[in-house]
Amino acid sequence: MLRCDIITIFPDFFREVFEYGIIRRARAAGLVQLESHDLRRWSTDKHHSVDDRPFGGGEGMVLKPEPIFAAVKELTGAATRRDFAPSTRVVLLSPQGRVFSQQLAQEFAQQASHLVLICGRYEGIDERVADALVTDEISIGDYVLSGGEPAAVVVVDALIRLLPGAVGNESSTANESFAAGLLDCPQYTRPPEFLGLKVPEVLLHGNHAEIARWRREAALKKTERYRPDLLK
Ligand code: 9D3
Image 1 (cartoon, rainbow, N blue to C red):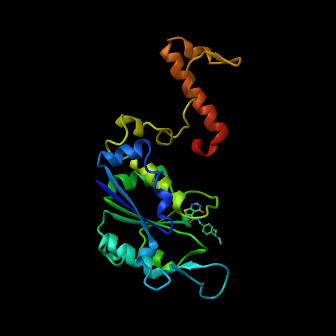
Image 2: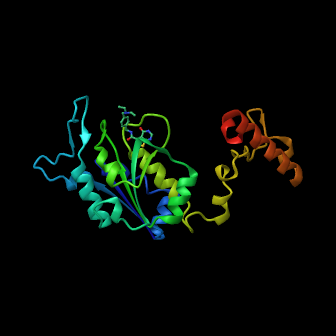
Image 3: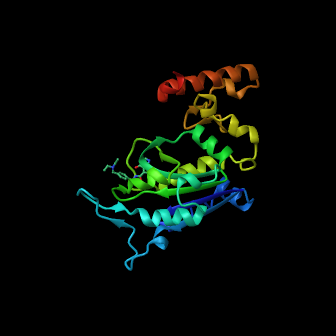
C-alpha cells in the first residue's frame, strides 16, 4: 500500500479529481491511500497565516517554513530529511524543480511507500523547505501554472497507474509509448469511411505482418513530426 499525502492551501481542489478511472479503482482496491491536507491546519498564529513578506523586499508573499515543517513532521514522524525512512519521499512541486518524467514516476512507484507532496503557491516557498525537508523538487514542464496543485495531480496519476495491479494488463504499462521511445501509432475503429475520411486500407485486412510494418512506420512519422527529440 502506497500512502500519498498532499499538503496544499486548496485541499478541496483534489476532492473529485482522484475519483475517476484507474485512480478510483486503485484506491478502492487498497493499492494507494490518498489524502489532501489543508496547510492552515498547521499554522499557529491567530490569523492562520501560512505566508509572509519576502526578506530583502519584492512583490508578493512567500510560504512560511513553520507550518510546512510541522505538517511534514506530523505526516512522516521525522522533523527533517535526515530522519526520513528511505522509502519516504517528500516532493516539492515548483517551477524550479527537475522536470518530471516516466523514469521518475517508475522510481517512485518502485521505491516509495510514503509520498508527501507539497504544493507551492504565491511567489514561492521559503527555501529552507527545499534545503532541509524536501527529497525531490519537481516541475512538470516549462509553462507557468498558478500553483503546484495541478502538478501534484499529474505526478499522482502517472505514479498510481504503475503500481502493480492498478492497470488491468500488467504488460500494457511496460509497453507504453515513452517506455518504447516512440509515440503511439494512429488507431481507427468503425466505420471504415466517415465524412469521406477513410481508414488506411491495410488495417481493414488481416495481414498482420503488413499491419505491424504500417504501424511502426506511422509511429515513426508521428514521432518525427511532433517529438523529434525522442528519436535522438
Ligand atoms: C518561475 C516563475 N516565478 C517567477 C517569479 C513565479 C511563479 C510562477 C508559478 C511562482 C510559482 C508558480 C506556481 N507554479 C508552481 O507552483 C508549479 C509549476 C509550474 O508553474 N510549472 C510547471 N510545474 C510546476 S510544479 C509547481
